[in-house]
Amino acid sequence: MSTEHPSDDAIASKLKAFQGLFLRWNERINLSAARTPAELAEHIQDCLSVVDVLRPCKRVLDVGSGGGLPVVVAAISLPETQFVALEPVHKKHAFLRTAARELELANLEAFAKRLDDHDDHDYDAATSRATFDLPTWLDLGLQHVRTGGFVVGFEAQRRTDLPATIRRIPYGAAKSRALIILDKP
Image 1 (tube, one colour):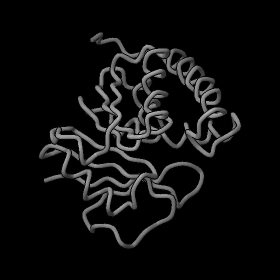
Image 2 (image 1 turned 60 degrees about the vertical axis):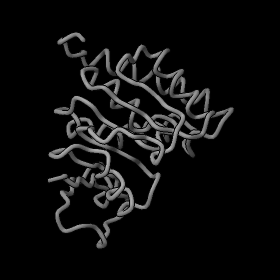
Image 3 (image 1 turned 90 degrees about the horizontal axis):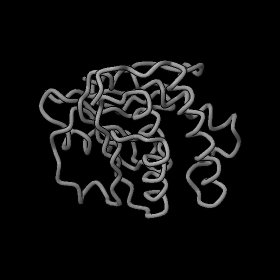
Image 4 (image 1 turned 30 degrees about the vertical axis):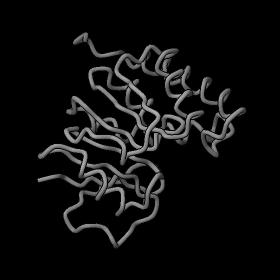
């Protein structure tokens, strides 16, 4: 892979292309409740919050990838990182494959399978957004990252039932939103 980092303009251009592709597909299949460009832009902004956390990773697993939030956004922003997207719903999997092809994301590979059918357990990080209850996701994600890796979840409202060892990184305008990071010792 190239060692050049994409320019902010190149990233913005691909994010705009992703937004158009997403909205076209979302008219035919339910990728997300985001129906307008403004609603989708808010989701994309949420997903951009995870980019800096994933920057040091070489290989990332995204589970329940659906409409590509956050995996496509992260793959656009981090072309040096290899992303594996798991999405068992075939229509959504087809969207992810189309997004990877049309946006020329050689670093994104999508599989039409569930997490319990995925045998790789050596990722640097694992992400999931609104697929599982957060404590369940943290437990499942830890099973798929290497020692020293971490799991990332998205918290919409502050929770008190999470492990004491999490790191919480607030993001966005809503003070209750945070990335939840759990390291695997």
